[in-house]
Amino acid sequence: MYRQIFHCLGAYKKYALLAPVTVIGEVILEVLIPMMMARIINIGISNGDVPYVIKMGAVMIITALLSLCFGALSGRFAAVAATGLSKGLRKKLFHQVQDFSFSNIDKFSTASLITRLTTDVTNTQNAFQMVIRMLVRAPIMLVLATFMAVRINASLAGIFLVAVPVLAVSLGLIISLAFPRFTKMLKKYDALNADVQENLIAIRVVKAFVREKFENEKFHNSADLLRAAQKKAEKIIIFNMPIMQFVMYGCMIAVCWFGGMQIISGHMETGDLMSFFSYLTQILMSLMMVAMICVMLVLSKASITRILEIFDESPDIQNPSASAVMENGSIVFENVNFSYGNDPQNLTLQNISLTIHSGETVGIIGGTGSAKTTLVQLIPRLYDVLQGRVLVGGHDVREYDLKSLRDQVAMVLQKNVLFSGSIRSNLKWGNENASEQEISAACQAAQAENFILSFPDGYDTDLGQGGVNVSGGQKQRLCIARALLKKPKIIILDDSTSAVDTATDSKIRAAFREELAGTTTIIIAQRISSICDADKIIVLNEGKIDAIGTHEELLKNNAIYREVYESQQKGVA
View 1 (tube, rainbow, N blue to C red):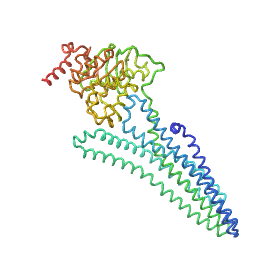
View 2 (spheres, rainbow, N blue to C red):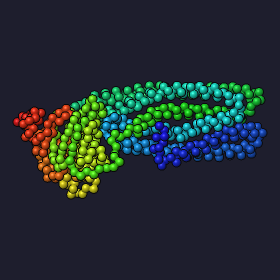
View 3 (cartoon, rainbow, N blue to C red):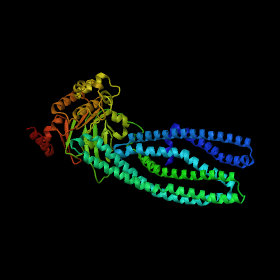
View 4 (cartoon, rainbow, N blue to C red):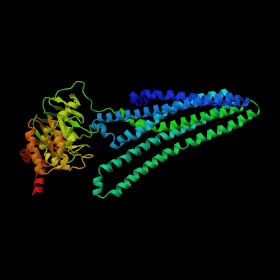
């Protein structure tokens, strides 16, 4: 577990090594100070030797300053190493998510991924910073201070033999009880983040339906569940400090009693007792540090486990060792079965056999839930088939390099997504090297240029987050233009003109016939008018092909298509 985490340090490993080295120097110097103090009392003050007191006092000051310098350096090195680790973790997590297939992403909620990239990484960063400082400092301080205490008075040091087992047992119980509670607490963080994300994305719907009160109550419930989970976890952790203090003060009382008796009997000097107290404090503080680190590691272990779940998730879709070259835009489905859960008993697509020739325009229609989107997502290999195979350009899609395949298959998804930035920067997602003429031609074909030029800044208009300042129809046309800029062999329009009027839809289809004469075009639509002039139309019903034919053939021979057509004609009438 920790080896995978530390691997993300990268160039910051040297700081992770320098931090404990400087901590060791700090501890050694700190342990020497009580010994010097004992000599000042036992030799200098007892004998009235002022020069000795001044000399040892100067040595003590220099030692303390050097210890301070080492401490400052260790703090800086640990901070740099910890922030470097968090950077490496976030980078690796984000890259891993980018490599996920749709089926991998389906296993984790968006809110959970955000929590892992933020809260869980921060918990790990804080724990790592404590480990390379305090977890090094505490054991070394404990060993050296104990050695010095035994050297001063072995019988008095026997008090620690009683204290350490008490602390160890108590700490073990606290850790074993706290870990599962912290794991549950982090899941409540996921739920809270999910509520916040959902509310902010759908804020216009919330306002339109006047559901602010409901959303406030939902958030309050999530926050209250998180508070309760935190309280339940902290209930165990808070016992740590009282137990530590009880043991610490008990040891001090015992040392006062037995040390005082030995001074009275002449078996111990005053300076030795004072330095013994200093070593006692160092020992007990070291034990308290160990306890604090263990508590932090409990929380970080829960976070690290969640981070490693992402690292260990193997992308379902892998690139082949040798890549095929796409020669044309033909598409063939051979006895394809597909299920989102890879469950052969619960198929989303069943026995799909279909041939689409290069350059054809194909329409797909069917009721809600008939797996229209699922069918076309198999073409650019966003999902892999369960059985059968999908051939594009004469080769199985699993034989293509993913980048080369998807560069040749442009998709305008059902949910139109734009990114923060200008219209031009969004369009260049289709082709980052596109010229102004190519951008203009694509926007003209998508019937988008008129409204773009109506903005004061034209193509440099800032879209805001997710394109909040353009309408649904404008979003769709920008997404179509972005896809056209790829100049693909296959273009898939997944209900991508649903928000535009029929006249604009007709103009877009006319432009497609001119601009995409040699491109295979697949149009998923709810309106018959959007696909009636396609070379062939596929009717899907409950994940199966119900019929394939032209508009006229399906009107004659297919009840589902005829029913949809007649219902839409009545609507027009």
